[in-house]
Amino acid sequence: MITVQETSIDTPQGVAFLQARVALVGKLLTVVFGGARCLQAVVELARGRPTALVAPEFLLGWTAALCVLAMWLLCRTGTRSRRYVQTVEAVCFLGTTVLVALMGRYINMVAFAGITSHSESPNWVLSSGRPCSSS
Image (tube, one colour):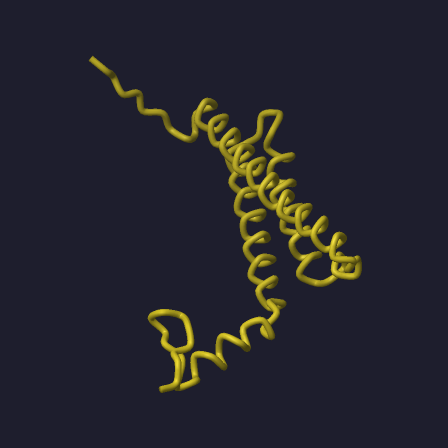
């Protein structure tokens, strides 16, 4: 028979679990965000565009990666209180969310101009995604 143990988040074990979970999420998001920024840096340098590394969207991405890195570093060791862990989690997630949302302001809308002009054309078949032949 399996017995279920109920643990409250207010117990030392519950707070340790919460802290470990927040640290793990911070570590994983650091790898994802940091890896994406490093890959973007390599691509921009390979294209011969080093000025893209100081563009607003790139800097906002690095700042978002630093937010989740801070979440990981602040919760990875030591014994913290529940309030501290939850505050770190909330502030870092809120900061990351705001920074990622601000990155959306810098999407290159010129790339979408072709989509708009093709979809408004009378010879464009949306189901196939190709222009139909004019007969």
